[in-house]
Amino acid sequence: MLLSRFTYWPSARTWRTALIAVFAVSLYLGSSQPACAYYIGPSYLQISGVDGGAVHPEFRGWLRAESNYWTERPELHEIRGISGRFNGLKFTGPRAPSSGPSMLAVAVDKANPGLAELMMRCRSGEKIAEVTYAESADMARHPQEHGPRPKDVPSYYQYRLKDVRLTCPVVEDAPEQAFALHFDAIEWINFAPQVQPREISSQPARLAPAPRSGTSRAFVVSWFAPVSDSNEDQCPVMNKKPDQQDYYALMPPERAEAQRAALEPKGGADTRVLPYRGPDEMNVTMLPGIVADPGLAEPQVSAVRGFNLDGHDGIGDFPKTTRPHRNYVSADGESGIDNQLFAVQGCIAGWRRDGFLPMIGNELRRAGGLSILVEISGIDDERNDDEVAVSLYYSLDPMRRDGTSKIILPDFTFRTSDSSEYSQSFARFSGKIVDGVISTDPLDRIYLHEGPATTWSMRQARMRLRIEEDGRLKALLGGYRDWREYLAYAFFRSSDYENTIGYNSPGLYNAVKRAADGLKDPLTGEYRGISGAYEIEGVPAFIPQLQKQARAAR
Image 1: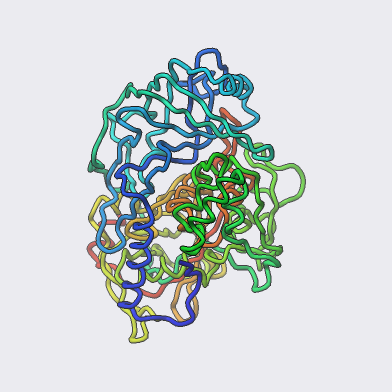
Image 2 (image 1 turned 90 degrees about the vertical axis):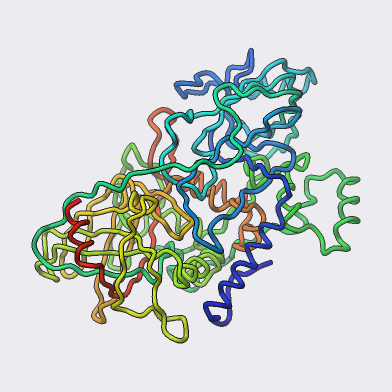
Protein backbone atom coordinates (compact mmCIF):
# COMPACT_ATOMS: atom_id res chain seq x y z
CA MET A 1 0.00 0.00 0.00
CA LEU A 2 1.61 3.27 -1.12
CA LEU A 3 0.13 6.45 0.31
CA SER A 4 2.77 9.06 -0.48
CA ARG A 5 0.37 11.89 -1.31
CA PHE A 6 -3.34 12.69 -1.57
CA THR A 7 -5.01 14.62 -4.38
CA TYR A 8 -7.75 15.98 -2.12
CA TRP A 9 -8.14 16.88 1.53
CA PRO A 10 -10.65 14.55 3.17
CA SER A 11 -12.78 15.24 6.19
CA ALA A 12 -11.50 14.53 9.69
CA ARG A 13 -13.70 11.46 9.93
CA THR A 14 -12.42 10.14 6.59
CA TRP A 15 -8.85 10.76 7.69
CA ARG A 16 -9.32 8.91 10.97
CA THR A 17 -10.86 5.96 9.16
CA ALA A 18 -8.08 5.90 6.57
CA LEU A 19 -5.31 6.21 9.14
CA ILE A 20 -6.65 3.43 11.32
CA ALA A 21 -7.03 1.26 8.23
CA VAL A 22 -3.43 1.95 7.17
CA PHE A 23 -2.03 0.99 10.54
CA ALA A 24 -4.36 -1.96 10.88
CA VAL A 25 -2.84 -3.28 7.67
CA SER A 26 0.63 -2.66 9.12
CA LEU A 27 -0.29 -4.62 12.20
CA TYR A 28 -1.73 -7.44 10.12
CA LEU A 29 1.45 -7.78 8.10
CA GLY A 30 3.43 -8.78 11.17
CA SER A 31 3.49 -12.35 12.45
CA SER A 32 1.42 -13.48 15.42
CA GLN A 33 4.35 -13.88 17.83
CA PRO A 34 3.97 -11.57 20.85
CA ALA A 35 7.66 -10.75 21.23
CA CYS A 36 9.69 -8.21 19.27
CA ALA A 37 13.40 -7.72 19.75
CA TYR A 38 15.72 -5.76 17.50
CA TYR A 39 17.55 -2.46 17.31
CA ILE A 40 20.22 -0.58 15.40
CA GLY A 41 23.05 0.42 17.71
CA PRO A 42 25.90 -1.21 19.61
CA SER A 43 25.64 -4.51 21.44
CA TYR A 44 28.50 -6.70 22.62
CA LEU A 45 29.61 -10.35 22.45
CA GLN A 46 32.23 -12.02 24.64
CA ILE A 47 33.72 -15.13 23.04
CA SER A 48 36.76 -16.87 24.47
CA GLY A 49 39.81 -16.22 22.30
CA VAL A 50 38.22 -13.40 20.30
CA ASP A 51 39.52 -9.88 21.01
CA GLY A 52 36.97 -7.50 19.53
CA GLY A 53 38.65 -4.34 20.76
CA ALA A 54 35.48 -2.75 22.20
CA VAL A 55 36.21 0.37 24.27
CA HIS A 56 33.00 0.43 26.30
CA PRO A 57 34.16 0.43 29.96
CA GLU A 58 31.88 -2.46 30.93
CA PHE A 59 32.67 -4.56 27.85
CA ARG A 60 36.26 -3.67 27.09
CA GLY A 61 37.78 -6.07 24.58
CA TRP A 62 34.44 -7.65 23.66
CA LEU A 63 33.26 -7.85 20.07
CA ARG A 64 30.88 -5.05 19.16
CA ALA A 65 27.86 -5.60 16.91
CA GLU A 66 26.18 -2.74 15.01
CA SER A 67 22.62 -4.13 14.97
CA ASN A 68 20.77 -7.20 16.11
CA TYR A 69 17.55 -9.20 16.20
CA TRP A 70 16.33 -12.31 17.98
CA THR A 71 14.65 -15.35 16.33
CA GLU A 72 14.50 -16.23 12.64
CA ARG A 73 11.46 -14.06 11.88
CA PRO A 74 11.07 -11.47 14.65
CA GLU A 75 7.74 -9.82 15.28
CA LEU A 76 7.59 -6.09 14.54
CA HIS A 77 6.95 -3.52 17.24
CA GLU A 78 3.24 -3.05 17.73
CA ILE A 79 1.85 0.40 16.91
CA ARG A 80 0.50 2.21 19.94
CA GLY A 81 -1.70 5.24 20.38
CA ILE A 82 -3.18 5.62 16.90
CA SER A 83 -6.86 5.02 17.59
CA GLY A 84 -6.96 6.26 21.20
CA ARG A 85 -5.04 7.86 24.05
CA PHE A 86 -1.76 6.21 24.89
CA ASN A 87 0.43 6.82 27.92
CA GLY A 88 4.03 6.46 26.80
CA LEU A 89 5.37 6.35 30.36
CA LYS A 90 6.17 2.66 30.10
CA PHE A 91 9.28 0.56 29.95
CA THR A 92 9.34 -2.64 27.94
CA GLY A 93 11.70 -5.25 29.29
CA PRO A 94 13.93 -7.64 27.33
CA ARG A 95 12.39 -9.46 24.40
CA ALA A 96 15.06 -12.09 24.09
CA PRO A 97 13.81 -15.69 24.17
CA SER A 98 13.30 -16.91 27.71
CA SER A 99 14.63 -20.34 26.77
CA GLY A 100 16.30 -22.08 23.85
CA PRO A 101 16.92 -23.25 21.28
CA SER A 102 16.68 -20.10 19.20
CA MET A 103 18.76 -17.66 17.17
CA LEU A 104 20.42 -14.26 17.56
CA ALA A 105 21.39 -12.34 14.41
CA VAL A 106 24.04 -9.62 14.56
CA ALA A 107 26.00 -7.46 12.14
CA VAL A 108 29.70 -6.74 12.76
CA ASP A 109 31.62 -3.94 11.07
CA LYS A 110 34.19 -5.40 8.67
CA ALA A 111 36.86 -3.18 10.23
CA ASN A 112 36.37 -4.85 13.63
CA PRO A 113 39.69 -6.34 14.85
CA GLY A 114 37.98 -9.54 16.00
CA LEU A 115 36.23 -10.27 12.71
CA ALA A 116 38.91 -12.53 11.20
CA GLU A 117 38.98 -14.82 14.25
CA LEU A 118 35.20 -14.99 14.40
CA MET A 119 35.01 -15.87 10.71
CA MET A 120 37.51 -18.70 11.30
CA ARG A 121 35.32 -20.02 14.12
CA CYS A 122 32.29 -19.83 11.91
CA ARG A 123 33.87 -21.60 8.95
CA SER A 124 35.24 -24.37 11.14
CA GLY A 125 31.69 -25.46 11.92
CA GLU A 126 32.56 -26.20 15.54
CA LYS A 127 30.13 -25.24 18.27
CA ILE A 128 31.15 -22.56 20.72
CA ALA A 129 30.40 -23.71 24.25
CA GLU A 130 29.37 -20.29 25.54
CA VAL A 131 28.84 -16.75 24.24
CA THR A 132 27.98 -13.88 26.58
CA TYR A 133 25.86 -11.22 24.96
CA ALA A 134 24.92 -7.72 26.15
CA GLU A 135 22.27 -5.46 24.57
CA SER A 136 21.27 -1.93 25.54
CA ALA A 137 18.13 -1.76 27.68
CA ASP A 138 17.34 1.71 26.36
CA MET A 139 17.72 0.85 22.69
CA ALA A 140 15.88 -2.47 23.06
CA ARG A 141 12.91 -0.56 24.48
CA HIS A 142 9.79 0.02 22.41
CA PRO A 143 10.45 3.27 20.48
CA GLN A 144 7.08 4.80 21.39
CA GLU A 145 7.92 4.77 25.10
CA HIS A 146 9.61 7.61 26.95
CA GLY A 147 10.58 8.62 30.44
CA PRO A 148 13.49 7.49 32.62
CA ARG A 149 14.80 3.93 32.79
CA PRO A 150 13.78 2.38 36.15
CA LYS A 151 16.61 2.16 38.67
CA ASP A 152 16.38 -1.62 38.89
CA VAL A 153 16.81 -2.06 35.13
CA PRO A 154 20.47 -2.46 34.10
CA SER A 155 21.88 -0.31 31.33
CA TYR A 156 22.66 -3.51 29.41
CA TYR A 157 20.82 -6.81 29.61
CA GLN A 158 23.23 -9.75 29.63
CA TYR A 159 22.70 -13.34 28.55
CA ARG A 160 24.72 -16.57 28.23
CA LEU A 161 24.11 -18.46 25.02
CA LYS A 162 25.05 -22.15 25.26
CA ASP A 163 26.33 -24.49 22.52
CA VAL A 164 26.36 -21.92 19.77
CA ARG A 165 26.66 -22.77 16.08
CA LEU A 166 27.60 -19.87 13.81
CA THR A 167 26.58 -19.18 10.24
CA CYS A 168 28.15 -16.25 8.38
CA PRO A 169 26.93 -15.63 4.83
CA VAL A 170 29.29 -13.27 3.02
CA VAL A 171 28.36 -10.34 0.79
CA GLU A 172 31.66 -8.97 -0.50
CA ASP A 173 30.60 -5.34 -0.98
CA ALA A 174 28.66 -5.06 2.28
CA PRO A 175 30.15 -2.79 4.98
CA GLU A 176 29.17 -5.23 7.74
CA GLN A 177 29.31 -9.01 8.16
CA ALA A 178 26.20 -10.95 9.16
CA PHE A 179 26.31 -13.66 11.81
CA ALA A 180 23.56 -15.93 13.00
CA LEU A 181 24.17 -17.46 16.44
CA HIS A 182 22.08 -20.62 16.69
CA PHE A 183 22.06 -21.62 20.35
CA ASP A 184 20.66 -24.60 22.23
CA ALA A 185 19.99 -22.75 25.50
CA ILE A 186 19.95 -19.23 26.94
CA GLU A 187 20.53 -18.02 30.49
CA TRP A 188 19.45 -14.56 31.61
CA ILE A 189 22.26 -13.12 33.76
CA ASN A 190 21.09 -9.81 35.26
CA PHE A 191 17.34 -9.53 34.62
CA ALA A 192 14.23 -11.68 34.50
CA PRO A 193 11.67 -11.98 31.71
CA GLN A 194 9.04 -9.24 31.88
CA VAL A 195 5.82 -10.21 30.16
CA GLN A 196 4.21 -6.76 29.91
CA PRO A 197 5.61 -3.22 29.71
CA ARG A 198 5.82 -1.74 33.18
CA GLU A 199 4.38 1.64 34.06
CA ILE A 200 6.91 4.23 35.19
CA SER A 201 6.73 7.75 36.59
CA SER A 202 8.52 11.01 35.92
CA GLN A 203 8.74 14.52 37.32
CA PRO A 204 7.63 17.78 35.69
CA ALA A 205 10.40 19.70 34.00
CA ARG A 206 12.15 22.34 36.11
CA LEU A 207 11.93 25.44 33.97
CA ALA A 208 14.05 28.56 34.36
CA PRO A 209 11.97 31.54 35.54
CA ALA A 210 10.41 33.60 32.74
CA PRO A 211 11.03 37.37 32.55
CA ARG A 212 8.77 39.25 34.98
CA SER A 213 8.09 42.28 32.78
CA GLY A 214 6.42 42.60 29.41
CA THR A 215 3.60 40.87 27.59
CA SER A 216 3.28 37.37 26.19
CA ARG A 217 2.01 35.80 22.98
CA ALA A 218 0.85 32.20 22.73
CA PHE A 219 0.31 29.97 19.69
CA VAL A 220 -0.94 26.47 18.97
CA VAL A 221 1.17 24.64 16.40
CA SER A 222 -0.78 23.96 13.22
CA TRP A 223 2.16 22.51 11.26
CA PHE A 224 5.30 20.70 12.39
CA ALA A 225 7.62 18.88 9.97
CA PRO A 226 11.29 18.47 9.06
CA VAL A 227 12.73 20.95 6.60
CA SER A 228 12.80 18.76 3.51
CA ASP A 229 11.97 21.19 0.70
CA SER A 230 14.29 23.88 -0.63
CA ASN A 231 12.85 24.15 -4.14
CA GLU A 232 10.62 22.13 -6.45
CA ASP A 233 13.40 20.83 -8.69
CA GLN A 234 15.90 19.94 -5.97
CA CYS A 235 15.88 16.22 -6.86
CA PRO A 236 17.01 15.08 -10.33
CA VAL A 237 16.22 11.57 -9.05
CA MET A 238 13.87 10.53 -6.26
CA ASN A 239 14.70 7.64 -3.99
CA LYS A 240 12.82 4.41 -4.55
CA LYS A 241 11.49 1.61 -2.42
CA PRO A 242 12.92 -1.91 -2.90
CA ASP A 243 11.59 -3.86 -5.86
CA GLN A 244 11.10 -7.50 -6.76
CA GLN A 245 14.60 -7.86 -8.14
CA ASP A 246 16.08 -6.71 -4.83
CA TYR A 247 14.25 -9.54 -3.09
CA TYR A 248 15.70 -12.28 -5.30
CA ALA A 249 19.17 -10.79 -5.84
CA LEU A 250 21.04 -12.81 -3.18
CA MET A 251 18.98 -16.01 -3.30
CA PRO A 252 20.39 -19.25 -4.72
CA PRO A 253 18.72 -19.95 -8.11
CA GLU A 254 16.73 -22.91 -6.82
CA ARG A 255 15.31 -20.96 -3.89
CA ALA A 256 14.53 -17.95 -6.07
CA GLU A 257 12.65 -20.15 -8.54
CA ALA A 258 10.62 -21.72 -5.74
CA GLN A 259 9.78 -18.35 -4.22
CA ARG A 260 8.71 -16.90 -7.56
CA ALA A 261 6.41 -19.82 -8.13
CA ALA A 262 4.87 -19.35 -4.68
CA LEU A 263 4.64 -15.55 -4.66
CA GLU A 264 3.95 -14.36 -8.20
CA PRO A 265 0.39 -15.74 -8.36
CA LYS A 266 -0.31 -13.56 -5.28
CA GLY A 267 1.25 -10.41 -6.75
CA GLY A 268 4.91 -11.09 -5.99
CA ALA A 269 7.05 -10.39 -2.93
CA ASP A 270 5.26 -8.05 -0.52
CA THR A 271 6.23 -6.30 2.69
CA ARG A 272 5.96 -9.51 4.68
CA VAL A 273 8.92 -11.05 2.86
CA LEU A 274 10.77 -8.07 1.32
CA PRO A 275 12.82 -7.44 4.50
CA TYR A 276 14.32 -10.93 4.13
CA ARG A 277 16.38 -10.06 1.07
CA GLY A 278 19.73 -10.38 2.80
CA PRO A 279 22.14 -13.30 2.55
CA ASP A 280 20.55 -16.50 3.88
CA GLU A 281 17.30 -14.50 3.78
CA MET A 282 18.33 -12.43 6.78
CA ASN A 283 16.37 -9.25 7.53
CA VAL A 284 18.01 -6.15 6.00
CA THR A 285 15.68 -3.65 7.67
CA MET A 286 17.03 -4.91 11.01
CA LEU A 287 20.62 -5.57 9.86
CA PRO A 288 20.87 -2.93 7.13
CA GLY A 289 24.66 -3.06 6.81
CA ILE A 290 24.89 -6.70 5.67
CA VAL A 291 24.25 -5.98 1.97
CA ALA A 292 25.97 -3.65 -0.45
CA ASP A 293 25.06 0.01 0.00
CA PRO A 294 22.57 0.89 -2.78
CA GLY A 295 23.21 4.60 -2.22
CA LEU A 296 20.79 7.44 -1.55
CA ALA A 297 19.86 10.29 -3.88
CA GLU A 298 20.41 13.71 -2.26
CA PRO A 299 19.04 17.18 -3.09
CA GLN A 300 21.10 19.38 -5.40
CA VAL A 301 20.73 22.79 -3.74
CA SER A 302 22.86 25.29 -1.85
CA ALA A 303 20.24 27.36 0.06
CA VAL A 304 18.58 25.50 2.92
CA ARG A 305 16.82 26.63 6.08
CA GLY A 306 18.47 25.70 9.35
CA PHE A 307 21.07 26.85 11.87
CA ASN A 308 24.82 27.16 12.15
CA LEU A 309 25.00 24.66 14.98
CA ASP A 310 28.76 24.19 15.21
CA GLY A 311 29.83 27.82 14.76
CA HIS A 312 31.75 26.96 11.59
CA ASP A 313 31.04 28.99 8.44
CA GLY A 314 32.43 26.42 6.00
CA ILE A 315 35.85 28.05 5.63
CA GLY A 316 38.97 26.46 7.12
CA ASP A 317 39.19 23.53 9.49
CA PHE A 318 36.08 22.19 11.15
CA PRO A 319 35.86 22.09 14.96
CA LYS A 320 37.30 18.91 16.46
CA THR A 321 33.85 17.89 17.69
CA THR A 322 32.30 18.15 14.22
CA ARG A 323 32.66 15.77 11.29
CA PRO A 324 33.53 17.67 8.08
CA HIS A 325 30.37 18.00 6.01
CA ARG A 326 28.67 20.16 3.45
CA ASN A 327 27.46 23.51 4.78
CA TYR A 328 24.47 25.29 3.29
CA VAL A 329 23.56 28.96 3.01
CA SER A 330 20.28 30.30 4.36
CA ALA A 331 17.87 32.29 2.22
CA ASP A 332 19.04 35.52 3.90
CA GLY A 333 22.70 34.76 3.18
CA GLU A 334 23.93 33.25 6.44
CA SER A 335 26.68 30.72 5.76
CA GLY A 336 27.56 27.57 7.67
CA ILE A 337 24.03 26.15 7.89
CA ASP A 338 24.11 22.62 9.30
CA ASN A 339 21.20 20.50 8.10
CA GLN A 340 22.37 17.00 7.20
CA LEU A 341 18.91 15.61 7.83
CA PHE A 342 17.75 17.65 4.83
CA ALA A 343 20.44 15.99 2.71
CA VAL A 344 19.10 12.57 3.74
CA GLN A 345 15.36 13.22 3.50
CA GLY A 346 15.08 15.81 0.73
CA CYS A 347 14.64 13.26 -2.09
CA ILE A 348 12.40 10.82 -0.23
CA ALA A 349 8.82 11.47 -1.31
CA GLY A 350 7.21 10.52 1.99
CA TRP A 351 9.25 13.12 3.91
CA ARG A 352 8.64 16.06 1.57
CA ARG A 353 6.17 18.72 2.73
CA ASP A 354 3.34 17.11 0.75
CA GLY A 355 4.51 13.61 1.60
CA PHE A 356 2.89 10.87 3.63
CA LEU A 357 4.56 11.43 7.00
CA PRO A 358 4.15 15.21 7.39
CA MET A 359 0.56 15.02 6.20
CA ILE A 360 -0.41 12.10 8.43
CA GLY A 361 1.37 13.47 11.51
CA ASN A 362 -0.13 16.92 11.22
CA GLU A 363 -3.59 15.59 10.41
CA LEU A 364 -3.53 13.39 13.51
CA ARG A 365 -2.70 16.47 15.57
CA ARG A 366 -5.38 18.59 13.90
CA ALA A 367 -7.99 15.86 14.26
CA GLY A 368 -7.87 15.96 18.05
CA GLY A 369 -4.43 14.64 18.90
CA LEU A 370 -1.89 16.23 21.19
CA SER A 371 -1.58 20.02 20.81
CA ILE A 372 1.83 21.72 20.91
CA LEU A 373 1.90 25.23 22.38
CA VAL A 374 4.54 27.93 21.91
CA GLU A 375 4.60 30.91 24.28
CA ILE A 376 6.83 33.95 23.86
CA SER A 377 6.96 35.91 27.11
CA GLY A 378 8.72 38.94 28.52
CA ILE A 379 8.10 41.05 25.40
CA ASP A 380 8.82 44.71 26.20
CA ASP A 381 9.41 45.68 22.57
CA GLU A 382 8.17 43.53 19.67
CA ARG A 383 10.96 44.78 17.40
CA ASN A 384 13.99 44.70 19.67
CA ASP A 385 14.22 43.16 23.12
CA ASP A 386 17.32 41.73 24.78
CA GLU A 387 15.48 39.34 27.11
CA VAL A 388 12.51 37.15 26.24
CA ALA A 389 11.60 33.51 26.93
CA VAL A 390 10.23 30.94 24.50
CA SER A 391 8.40 28.03 26.11
CA LEU A 392 7.14 24.76 24.64
CA TYR A 393 4.12 23.15 26.29
CA TYR A 394 1.68 20.35 25.49
CA SER A 395 -2.08 20.35 25.79
CA LEU A 396 -4.75 17.66 25.54
CA ASP A 397 -7.28 20.27 24.36
CA PRO A 398 -8.03 19.74 20.64
CA MET A 399 -7.57 22.35 17.96
CA ARG A 400 -10.66 23.83 16.33
CA ARG A 401 -11.02 23.77 12.54
CA ASP A 402 -13.19 25.49 9.98
CA GLY A 403 -15.73 23.56 7.93
CA THR A 404 -13.17 22.45 5.34
CA SER A 405 -10.95 20.89 8.06
CA LYS A 406 -7.91 22.61 6.49
CA ILE A 407 -7.74 25.78 8.57
CA ILE A 408 -7.02 25.89 12.29
CA LEU A 409 -9.10 28.58 13.94
CA PRO A 410 -7.23 31.12 16.08
CA ASP A 411 -7.88 32.57 19.53
CA PHE A 412 -8.99 29.45 21.39
CA THR A 413 -7.79 28.66 24.90
CA PHE A 414 -5.55 25.65 25.56
CA ARG A 415 -4.79 24.33 29.02
CA THR A 416 -1.24 23.05 29.51
CA SER A 417 -1.25 19.41 30.53
CA ASP A 418 -0.68 18.61 34.19
CA SER A 419 0.18 15.00 33.33
CA SER A 420 3.83 14.23 33.99
CA GLU A 421 3.84 12.29 30.72
CA TYR A 422 3.93 15.67 28.97
CA SER A 423 4.98 18.15 31.68
CA GLN A 424 8.32 16.31 31.97
CA SER A 425 9.03 17.59 28.45
CA PHE A 426 8.07 21.24 28.87
CA ALA A 427 11.00 23.39 27.79
CA ARG A 428 11.96 27.04 28.10
CA PHE A 429 14.56 28.82 25.99
CA SER A 430 16.06 32.20 26.79
CA GLY A 431 16.21 34.52 23.82
CA LYS A 432 16.15 37.99 22.37
CA ILE A 433 14.39 39.93 19.59
CA VAL A 434 16.36 41.70 16.87
CA ASP A 435 14.47 43.49 14.08
CA GLY A 436 11.35 41.48 14.85
CA VAL A 437 13.08 38.06 14.77
CA ILE A 438 13.21 36.05 18.00
CA SER A 439 16.30 33.86 18.38
CA THR A 440 17.07 31.66 21.36
CA ASP A 441 20.11 30.31 23.11
CA PRO A 442 20.56 26.53 22.85
CA LEU A 443 19.26 24.02 25.37
CA ASP A 444 21.37 20.92 25.94
CA ARG A 445 18.45 18.54 25.35
CA ILE A 446 14.73 18.71 24.75
CA TYR A 447 12.10 16.04 24.16
CA LEU A 448 9.53 16.57 21.41
CA HIS A 449 6.11 14.94 21.52
CA GLU A 450 5.38 15.09 17.81
CA GLY A 451 2.12 13.28 18.53
CA PRO A 452 0.45 11.30 21.32
CA ALA A 453 2.70 8.30 20.65
CA THR A 454 5.77 9.79 18.93
CA THR A 455 8.46 11.22 21.20
CA TRP A 456 12.08 11.92 20.35
CA SER A 457 14.94 14.02 21.64
CA MET A 458 17.03 16.84 20.20
CA ARG A 459 20.41 17.97 21.51
CA GLN A 460 21.81 21.53 21.40
CA ALA A 461 18.32 22.66 20.42
CA ARG A 462 17.50 26.25 19.50
CA MET A 463 14.70 28.22 17.85
CA ARG A 464 14.17 31.15 15.50
CA LEU A 465 10.69 32.68 15.39
CA ARG A 466 8.80 35.49 13.72
CA ILE A 467 5.27 36.74 14.34
CA GLU A 468 3.81 37.54 10.92
CA GLU A 469 1.74 40.64 10.15
CA ASP A 470 -1.44 38.55 10.22
CA GLY A 471 -0.57 37.38 13.75
CA ARG A 472 0.49 33.89 12.82
CA LEU A 473 3.75 32.25 13.88
CA LYS A 474 6.54 31.01 11.61
CA ALA A 475 9.45 29.31 13.32
CA LEU A 476 12.37 26.92 12.98
CA LEU A 477 13.60 24.44 15.57
CA GLY A 478 17.06 23.00 15.06
CA GLY A 479 19.69 20.85 16.71
CA TYR A 480 21.10 17.33 16.58
CA ARG A 481 19.11 14.11 16.59
CA ASP A 482 20.68 10.83 17.68
CA TRP A 483 20.82 8.99 14.35
CA ARG A 484 20.09 5.63 15.98
CA GLU A 485 16.93 7.00 17.60
CA TYR A 486 15.98 8.50 14.25
CA LEU A 487 16.35 5.13 12.51
CA ALA A 488 14.38 3.39 15.25
CA TYR A 489 11.35 5.34 14.01
CA ALA A 490 12.25 5.14 10.31
CA PHE A 491 12.57 1.32 10.49
CA PHE A 492 9.79 0.95 13.05
CA ARG A 493 7.58 -1.09 10.74
CA SER A 494 10.22 -2.60 8.50
CA SER A 495 9.27 -2.80 4.80
CA ASP A 496 5.84 -1.37 5.51
CA TYR A 497 7.63 1.97 5.95
CA GLU A 498 10.06 1.43 3.05
CA ASN A 499 7.04 0.97 0.80
CA THR A 500 4.91 3.80 2.21
CA ILE A 501 7.60 6.46 2.65
CA GLY A 502 9.76 5.57 -0.33
CA TYR A 503 13.30 4.50 0.54
CA ASN A 504 15.56 1.46 0.70
CA SER A 505 16.61 0.66 4.30
CA PRO A 506 20.29 -0.18 3.62
CA GLY A 507 20.65 3.01 1.56
CA LEU A 508 19.07 5.14 4.28
CA TYR A 509 21.12 3.47 7.02
CA ASN A 510 24.46 4.09 5.33
CA ALA A 511 23.51 7.63 4.32
CA VAL A 512 22.51 8.58 7.87
CA LYS A 513 25.74 7.15 9.29
CA ARG A 514 27.77 9.12 6.74
CA ALA A 515 25.77 12.29 7.37
CA ALA A 516 26.08 12.24 11.17
CA ASP A 517 28.09 15.37 11.91
CA GLY A 518 27.81 16.10 15.64
CA LEU A 519 27.63 14.68 19.17
CA LYS A 520 31.07 13.11 18.92
CA ASP A 521 31.52 10.18 21.30
CA PRO A 522 34.65 10.85 23.39
CA LEU A 523 35.41 7.12 23.69
CA THR A 524 34.90 5.86 20.16
CA GLY A 525 35.28 9.07 18.16
CA GLU A 526 32.03 8.27 16.35
CA TYR A 527 29.41 10.91 15.59
CA ARG A 528 26.05 10.05 17.12
CA GLY A 529 24.14 13.17 16.06
CA ILE A 530 22.78 14.32 12.73
CA SER A 531 22.03 18.02 12.32
CA GLY A 532 18.51 18.98 11.31
CA ALA A 533 15.81 21.62 11.37
CA TYR A 534 12.02 21.52 11.71
CA GLU A 535 9.54 24.07 10.41
CA ILE A 536 6.75 25.25 12.71
CA GLU A 537 3.61 27.20 11.92
CA GLY A 538 1.10 28.32 14.52
CA VAL A 539 -2.03 30.37 15.05
CA PRO A 540 -2.72 32.71 17.98
CA ALA A 541 -4.04 31.00 21.09
CA PHE A 542 -4.49 31.63 24.79
CA ILE A 543 -3.19 29.88 27.88
CA PRO A 544 -5.23 30.33 31.09
CA GLN A 545 -3.77 33.16 33.16
CA LEU A 546 -3.31 31.10 36.32
CA GLN A 547 -1.42 28.43 34.39
CA LYS A 548 0.77 31.07 32.75
CA GLN A 549 1.67 32.48 36.13
CA ALA A 550 2.37 29.05 37.60
CA ARG A 551 4.56 27.98 34.64
CA ALA A 552 6.44 31.28 34.62
CA ALA A 553 7.69 30.72 38.15
CA ARG A 554 9.03 27.22 37.61
